[in-house]
Length: 384
Image 1 (tube, rainbow, N blue to C red):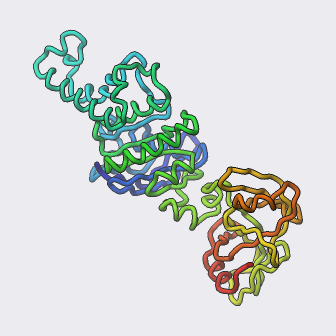
Image 2: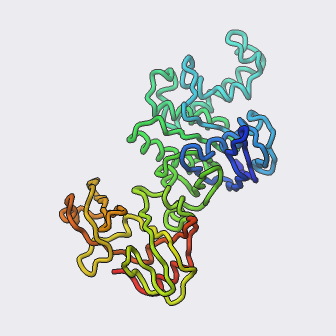
Image 3: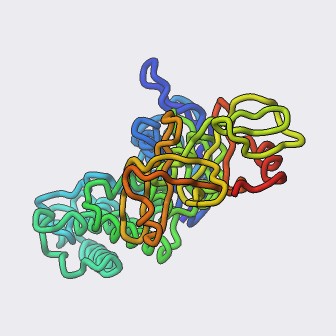
């Protein structure tokens, strides 16, 4: 296994710039997810790493070797595609064995009738069969080796695709939205299996997805991409709790973070005319964005700071999400409540909410995080 470095990668298709100087280091045995909306460049970046696309500029390094310009077949990488890419006429065992047959057997040894009898072919085929069996047992598909892809479920096909990648013992695994064709229940099961496989192999994984839940639950680090750039690359908890950019804050988290306009004067911050805090020393006065995760908002009966009307409810059993139209009707916020609070969240009911300023994220009009303002606010008083 090996680490991987992406250095100032750009990619243009005609006049369209898809990647804009992307730089990323992936350590040996690390699981890094590239996540972002459709069209952000994450799949293009993965294809450039794999050697299926050439960058307009920049370098790819695997281990200690620069592989920019090297053929995909010579990069010792295994790629798992969204569509599985299995051969329908081959059995599961034969599909898994394809990369080993191409690498270990000569063209003559691969011939269907005379090939097995050529010198050295028997030993190579025995080793290939053993590697296929080991991969199948690891992925718990040993009983399916004689079946054709058409006889398998979507989850079983995905395991076969993983097995085919696994037998190559590559420097790194590249996975391009491998769960997107599975139903919701199977996605949960398969993402757990991929995470367990990563731990067993202690291998380098680069995983492309637009599904933030997949990225949050499996990754060591998440690289959030938008507009052909990596906005932030950090551990999942940091991406969620401490985003550097409002676009990262809005993309990561379900339900979406609440963003409200606040005004910062020379001595106080206000929300819809309500004073949130007195600030003895703050940054430049003006309009900012205040970000609050749904769990940061609390129902309260004393000295309400925000009031509104329940406009929509989502009861998920263990928790309830309520969309609340604020008193001036210009904005809505989402709060997470417990089942015990469900009785106070009827549609049309008036509710009062509060929050702790230490849970608030402040962004300027350009979307950049303003930590100095946050420190100044949290040092004054809590909203209660």
